Length: 193
Image 1 (tube, rainbow, N blue to C red):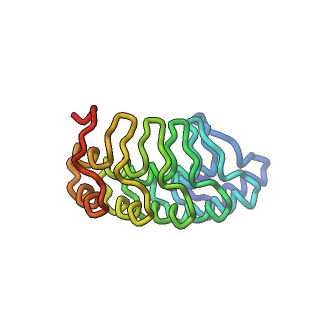
Image 2: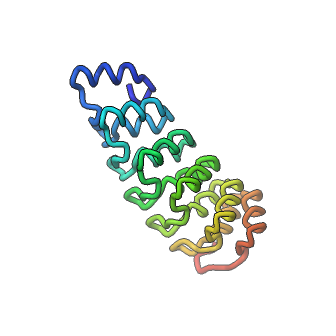
Image 3: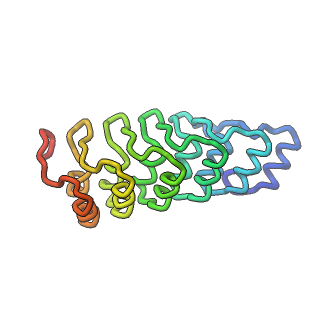
């Protein structure tokens, strides 16, 4: 019910004693399903019923990861108002910002920025949301990150910078955004080729 936006069905289940905190086989809660599909009315109903909105699934992802990765700005804004962390990394260190940047959702990056979420955290391999944006060709997100003062020239653990990732993937617009921001584009690293 939660993942499909059916508030009335969710409320009917709760009246019958069904827990609104049950997890599926992947450890995902109804709040995760609602955030994944941008159902803010369901998130509000779950909060009224006392369901936690920031629980992690089996991969360490929270409803904030689900909302950010699918570009659901209203859900992100609601989660922020409800006090859910928008900066926590999953088991691999990916934050909601990494997912939004990697899936080309600059509006979600803006929402995370307005909510005070960290936009420069490193995942397990040293990549930041800037690396995710560059690899996916999201020039708009790179521009947002630059305006926010996020470093755009740092290398991951393997030495690849956002500029390398944009070039490797043929993303000219991302390269141009990085150049306008003053990020290095041609520095060689030991793992460049």
